[in-house]
Image (tube, rainbow, N blue to C red; front, side, top):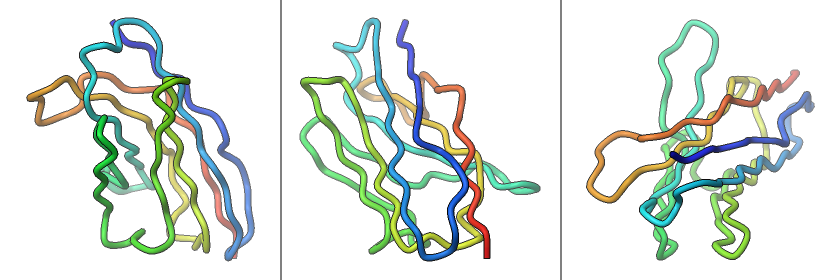
Length: 118
């Protein structure tokens, strides 16, 4: 089992920044990818950014150039730095973890609310 705990959400004005953190614990030795997803009101959950153990990343087109995913393997922590936030970034953000070979996340955090006011 893997436990994921997010923090760092909140209310911010458009153009502002937030940094989300996700601490992983438990049987993390088999986890090789971590990701951030989000679910906006009335919309389906979408992938925001993903990072491999080696540091390779990919992003949703809507956040490229504004968001940066990173990880600190020594702290078992993944971060999502969000800059130039827009009202459409308002959502619950979820941290997730993948086992090697998994197409979809095997574990999810409880989510953290990000609200961007215009």
